[in-house]
Image (cartoon, rainbow, N blue to C red; front, side, top):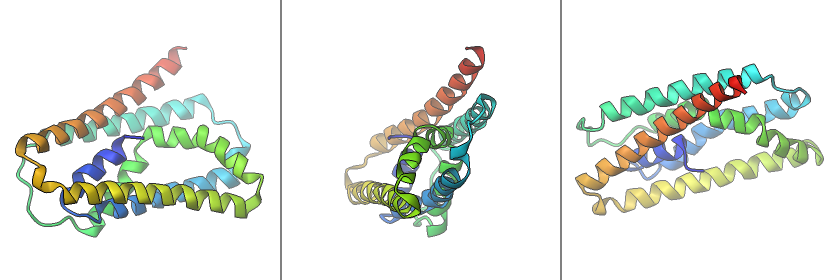
Length: 187
């Protein structure tokens, strides 16, 4: 699903063809423990609406904040150096951790998938978790390599358009999560 992780992959891939793989590793650092936590603990409980609202508001706020910061910095000249491996991995961790949609997805639809995998025991769930993360890894690696290899087609206008797209993704998803949270309070 296109979202904040995809947007950060696009940005980082302009400097490094390995950014997607590292972002996926960072994503997995957050996602895999969360899946196991749900498997062992949270799948036995109903998540209170106030917790879902809180996650949506906080995550949505951080996503809007990141979008505003990206918009403010869109014309800043960046160094021509390659991002460090640590920067891309941290981007994967950070973008995943503050994505309210990611958390809510795992606490709802993802929990349903985990309960289905639970029918096959810990081994079945572990295979599910591994294959799920592997698809993320392949996708973000492929996106980053394609973007890195196609840079000769990137003009200033294309670069600005992609930057604005990424800003819109961050702000749009953040506003959506905050609006959804507020709407659920009113409903």
